[in-house]
Image 1: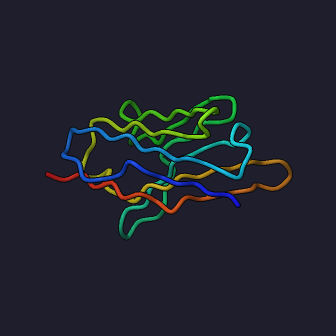
Image 2: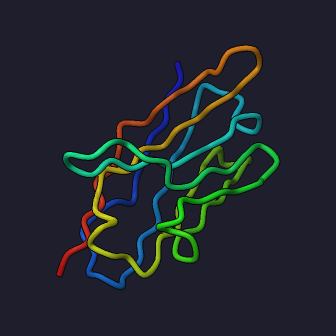
Image 3: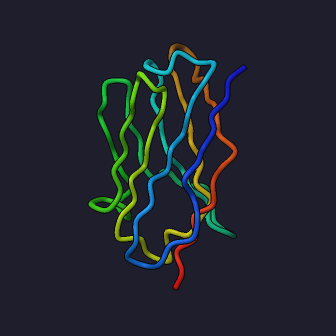
Length: 118
């Protein structure tokens, strides 16, 4: 059974920092590309950051220079370090694991709420 369990969300003031974690089980973690997506109320889910099995990273323009994605293949965990948070970063953040061979295999976490407000 595949599980992706996010943690680390919460309420933070503008300019603050949070670190999200996503612990994976039931998959060969090291071969999966891991991503963080977010969905704000009334908006579509959007890609925030991705890290490949080879540790290449890419980010949404809106978070470049403020967020850092990393992975620990021993702990089967992916992290999202978020700094200089803005109210527009408020959303539910979802962890995604994706593996492409012929078809794409996708798994999602349940999401963790991040609220940036004074």
